[in-house]
Image 1 (cartoon, helix red, strand yellow):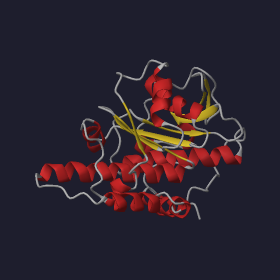
Image 2 (image 1 turned 120 degrees about the horizontal axis):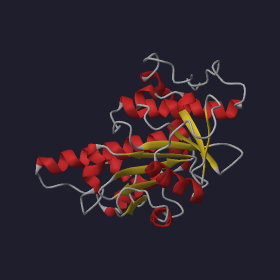
Image 3 (image 1 turned 45 degrees about the horizontal axis):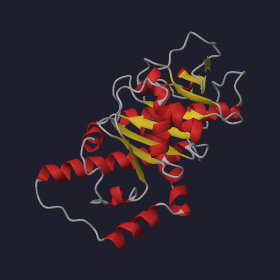
Image 4 (image 1 turned 90 degrees about the vertical axis):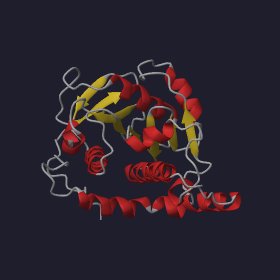
Length: 263
């Protein structure tokens, strides 16, 4: 059972379905914080809302990830208009980071299959994003993304809305993970649990690569047929569906830590 299904604090004006997404997205923020993938108040996680592909949730600018609650998430449209927060406050009261809006709105505009989008600035992710060879196929975690990873060149802080077209073009119609060169990591998922699995293992693959390169020894690379086989195994429907099991287990890591994320 999904631990996040406690909805006693749900405001009357929000549907059960939207509140569950708010609770799960707030939990995702806390899991990212628990695993030290934060950058103070920067980087962003977002989720598209049901019934209207033009509305999505993103963090209220300034709330630390380990304190994120369902009511701290802000509903915006694809034009950057703030609609309301979880408490029902309208328009100008919540603040949304402009660069976060640019990146996340791009994905939500173009990829209806990706309900949740995660962007991080971790040390390992930034390090690999600055390496010309990109993510190397040297670990099982990296092979999960073999042939399924996109790259997007750095254009400065993502404040220009016209960058959205180039970011979407680089991501393509099928990839769910991207390395933003000289910047960080970006993943999407059909569900919040799948997005969590994507960012967790891409981050771990980057950590392993940084450690392996730091060791200075010659690296062992699996043969091409093994790389393709492993990537196919990880990207089979059965394996992708297993992300829910990892999500349910992960929620135990943040249960009882401070205020409830479901509020």
